[in-house]
Length: 114
Image (cartoon, rainbow, N blue to C red; front, top):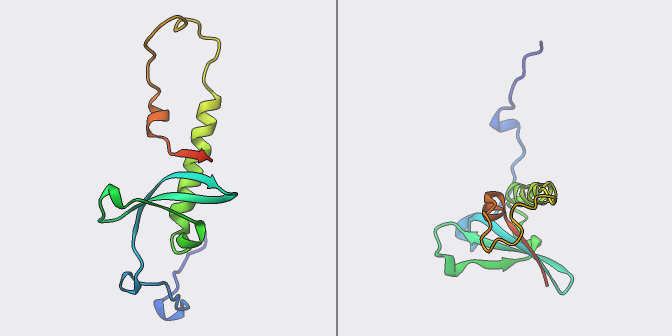
């Protein structure tokens, strides 16, 4: 078994990411995705801001948070896979006015196509 050593900070190249003082804001979460006029946009919840400040942003505006975008895309994929695995042959709920809510669809991120 080989021993892993981490690079010391002096060996890591400096990355010039924008700071919050440069007019950039911290992303708390990506809530939805849509395609508008052929371009992808993400609905962003900004950290420390009220829900009314949420905004649709192009991917170019989120280049500093690729991990957040990737996590959102993964959650979309898993939500689509879960949706595809539902039982369609269950006739017990036919004719019923009320249906049980599937929790995965309640908490799953939403993709919107316009």
